[in-house]
Amino acid sequence: METARPRSDEHSTSLRTNHGGVCLFFLDSLKVSRILFDGICSFEVTCARITGPQFSATFAVVYRPGSSAVTDLFFSEFSDLLQQIAVSSTPVFVVGDLNIHLDVVDDAAALKVLDILSTHSLTQHITQSTHNRGRTLDVLITRHDQAVTSVNVDPPSLSDHSMIVANVNLHAPPAFTVTRLPRRSWRSLDVDKFAEDLRHSTLMQTPPSDVNELFQCYNETLRSLVDIHAPLRMVSCWRGPRSAHWYDGECRKEKAKTRRLEHVCRHCPTSETQSCWRQPSSRLRKLLQHKASQYWSTAISSGNGDSKSLWTKINVLLKPPRPASSTSLSADDFAAYFTDKVNSIRSATAGAPPPVINTRTDVDRLSTFKPVTDDEIRRLLSAVPAKQCALDPATTWLIKQLADVISPVICHLCKLQYVTTVMPSTNCSEASHRSLSSQQTNI
Image (cartoon, rainbow, N blue to C red; front, side, top):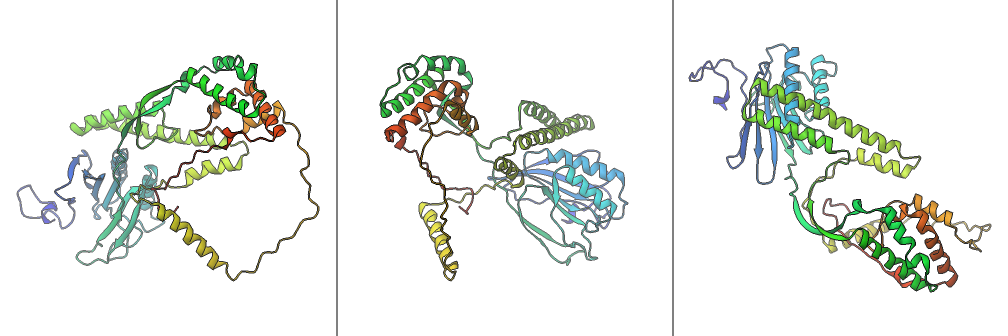
């Protein structure tokens, strides 16, 4: 640590100052790639990307001399530093001593630093005093979504600053896996031709009069037409982290361009290459923010008064990403959870008085059924969500698009089932998928 302090010259043993100097210690088993920044003169910085067997992160150690006044140059260079490392795909950590009173709410320099952090979607985790004079001068800066489990600030002892120890969760990025799975090319399906073949099918021309045969004809006809117009084929599926819904081709193209310029800058760090990389980086960040804002504004405004759908969309925005976990739950864990839950509810309500149930006398009774109409079937199909089961002969979105053609068939199916009081055997099947969540310990 002593050799990291600034000296009068490279071979001298005399110290130039009694403060300053930044260093980054790491295990020799880790892979470290140093990141250089030219032209920064208002503060000291050393930055590196550290990669281990199960993680990769970018660390920057900064120091701004307290003897120097806080100038606009510092804010400009500090913002440029954050801009260049914030676009990294790895977790980002900025630590060090800024010698700015971050605990003073009305301090102009502190407010400016917090505004810069907010612009780059970063946050400062240290809120306690880190100096023997009771000020918060040191920083631990990460992304907003970075999990920091604990931050311990010890009282100053060896120096006038505190030793700060933080625990963070660094998970390895999920590995991509490629599997061969059967898929249908729904994009190539011609709905008009599908509807034309459906009109000339046995289901539409001479439907069976028996309810079981009619349901079987319905399933077989739709399945056979689907196999003709969208046959199954084996495709390679990449399994891994999914991009956001708003991340489109324009974002990918701009990101690829920015990454190429970053690669050039990393291998040839000059003021010219940094300038060429800095502008696309800023443009990429603004594009991503615009795409996300536009997507969610459209999604929320399209709620059409549906409070359930609106809350589902807002909940995605408010809920933080679920951290990856290696915890595996067994069937015994699943059963024990619900057993304990039932027992806790019983013990909590053991002394509660019995509920008072008032019997209603004037109740409208359901005594008659009205035959369903084609128009009612069309309205139901237009309102039903596009979800389907593995037992469905055709996807729900296709049935919705064929509403005008298939509504009379579904209407006839409903009427025949009630008239004959027969539940077709094809409607008594089920497809269950038991899944124990491995993403969280709470079920």
